[in-house]
Length: 108
Image (cartoon, rainbow, N blue to C red; front, side):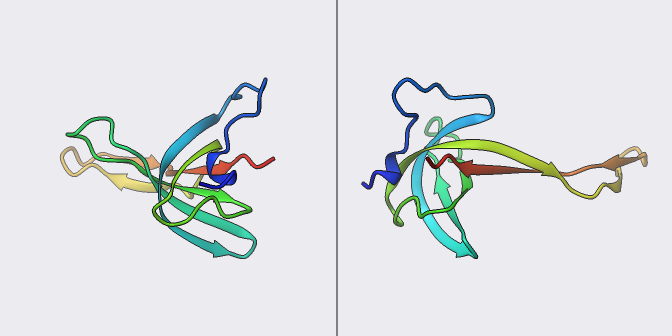
């Protein structure tokens, strides 16, 4: 496992607001421009639940396919264009604003 694959907060540093520690297996890595996108499969909470999958954006590669990584990340997000949705049961219409979450690696 490489040093980048085990990025944890440095000694004496605490995790800040909107930060999280991600641990999981690298399923796929792709690059677009100067950004690397790593799809990580996190362990399931128990044998009956589904494992969570997320994608981490970073400047450098976080690990090889099949490797288990631990990475400090910052959680972010943005809203997309609102649209009108109709409830099929009641017929009521409401405005829905989708929110996309982002996960970015903390790289020192």
